[in-house]
Image (cartoon, rainbow, N blue to C red; front, side):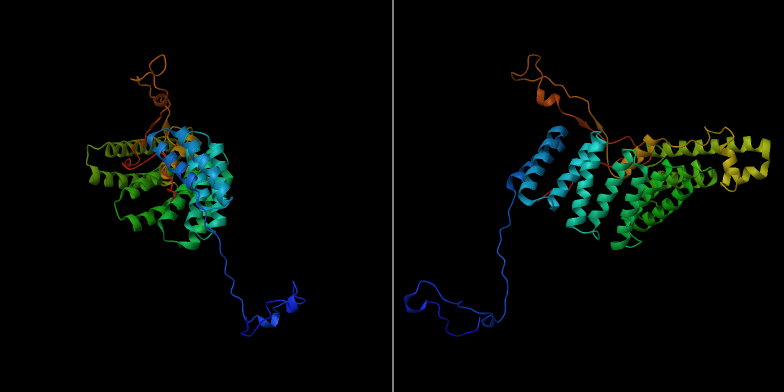
Length: 379
C-alpha cells in the first residue's frame, strides 16, 4: 500500500464509512501468501505398516484387509490423487495377482497407473513401471492385444526419459518377446530378445546370469521357429556361463546340458525326415530356419520336434521375469498349547500360508532375496 494517512475511523462518530478506505490506486503490488495445513494420515500409515508386516509373515488375506483399510483412510484424508494411494493400489494389485484373483489385480493396477500418470506425469519411470505391471495382469486375464498396447506404451515412455540404452528397456523387450510367443510371432520375438541381450551385456557384463537367461529364451524362440542351428549356439552360450559360474555338478549346468542334448536330437530328427522327400539341400535350409523349408518342417507332422509354448508356460516365465512368485496355499495346522478350539488347533496359525518362489525349471538361479510381494514402503 502507498504510505500515507488513511481515515481508518469513521468521521463524526459514525458507525460505518460512507466510502471505502482503500482504493485501487493505493495498491502498489500484491504478493499472495497462502497458509494451509499438511494433513498427515497417521492411522492410515499405521494400518499400511501393519499390513506389510502381516504380508511378510505370510498372512496375505489379513494383510490385504489392512492395506484396504489404509487405502480408505488415505482417500478420506488426501482425496483420490496421492502418491501413497497409488502405492496402496499397486500393493493390493500384486496381492490379488499372487493369490490368483487376476481380474481384481487388473482393477487395482488400473487405478495405480492412472494415479501415477496424474501425480508423477507420463515422463516418470514410475509410470512406465505401472504400465508393465498392468500389461502382465491384462495378459493373465486373456486380454493379449491390450497387453501389447500397454507394453508398447511403456516402451515409448521409457524411451522418452531413459533413451535407447537403459536396463529397463531390456525388461520391457523381454516381456514383449514372451507375449509374442502367444501369437506365434517368433521372428519379431527374436528381434526384441536380441536387443534385450545386447542391453544386458552392456549393463551386467559378459557371462552374467542375465545373459544366460536371455540366451536360453532366445534359444527357445529359435527352436520354435525351426532355426535349430541358432538355438544350439544360444544354448551353448548359456551352458558355458553356467559351467564357469557353478561347475559341472550344478543343477543349472545339468539342465542346460539336457537342453543342448534335446535340441541336438530335434535337429537330427528333423534333418532325417526332411532328407527323405526333399534331399540334403532342404535340410540345410531347415536347420538354419531359412526359406519355405521352415514352414514345410512344421507341416510334416513334426509337432514333437517343434513344440509351441502353452499359455501357462508363457505366463510362468513372465512372472519370473517380473519378479512375481507363486504362493502355495497350504494350511499350516499346529497344536495350540493354550485353551484354543476343541480340537486343540490355533485358528491364527491355521490361516497362515506358505510363500515360496516359483520353480525355475533350471532356467535361471533362484534369488535368495526374492519375496512373494514387493512394494515401496510408504513413509
